[in-house]
Image (tube, rainbow, N blue to C red):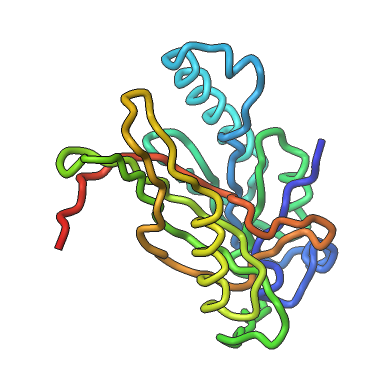
Length: 228
C-alpha cells in the first residue's frame, strides 16, 4: 500500500521522520479520505448505486480513523453530507497508525506543539511549489442565459513567485483546452475565468514531477454571467 503524503511539514521546517520523533507532542492534523479513487467495480456501478456505495465506504473509513484517533475525539468534515476528512489533535508518535489505514489520501499537518510556523517570503529566491486554485468556465456557443458548467480545480505549479505561478498556469490552461464541437455541433471552449487563490509551501515528493498536475477538481454549474 502506498504511504500517504504529508502536507504542510515544510511550514515547520521538519520532515516525516522529525514529526514522528516528536513523541507525545500534540499535532493538529487533517486526514483527507481517498473518496475520488476509482476502481473497475465502482466504474461499473450505476450512478445511484455508486453514490450509495461511496457514501457507505466514506462512513466506514471515517469511523475506523476516529477509533484510532484516541485520546481525543476528532471532527468529521463533510462535503455534500459525505465524510471527506477527519481533523483533530493527537500525539505525534501515533501518526504512523493513520498511515496504515485504508482510505487515507494524505495527512495535512496544521499545527505542531512547540514549533512555530515559518514565515515564507512572498518572492522565494529558488523555485518553489504553488497550489493554484482557479475557476475554468465551459463556454458553449450561443449560450447567453441559463446554466454554465465550470471546473473548480487546484493545480500544482513550480515557480519562483506567486505571479510567475499565475502566468505559467494561465498559459497551461490556454494550451490544454482546444475548442471542440459538442453533440449539437456547437463550439465549446474552456476558458480561465479567475484565479481564486495561490498558496505557497505545498509538500510534494522530490522524486515525482507534478508540475501542472491537477490535485483537485470539481465540475458544477452556475448561472451564465452577464456580459458587461
